[in-house]
Length: 126
Image (cartoon, rainbow, N blue to C red; front, side):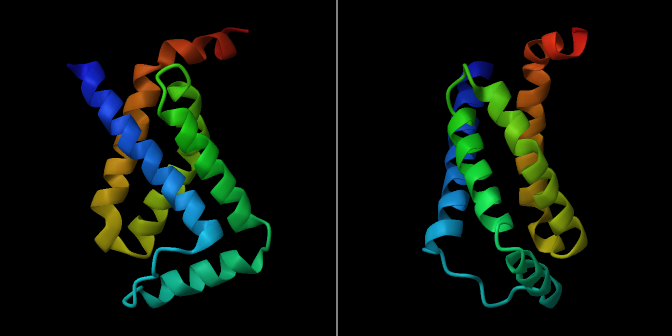
């Protein structure tokens, strides 16, 4: 049962990150009108660095694709961890209304990392 729940959450999680990455390239999701002023300033500053948003988008897409199949899920979780931390910090400091979703995203990512810890041991033991 645990594997089925983890698989369903991983598919939704992976598709969510793939969607987020693709949206950075194609802008098909509308930006909410009621974004906090500080969040608008943060995103404007990030867009000033011309290579940063495309890099984040590519990492989100690759990480999302890796997160779906069980064989590569541990790698996908590590690839997406910095982005999940960034989402969590952004919502913790700028837009607390999104904090429950950010915590849920972080929890899924950490669950997969903790569940896959044996796969990371060879990197540490060398």
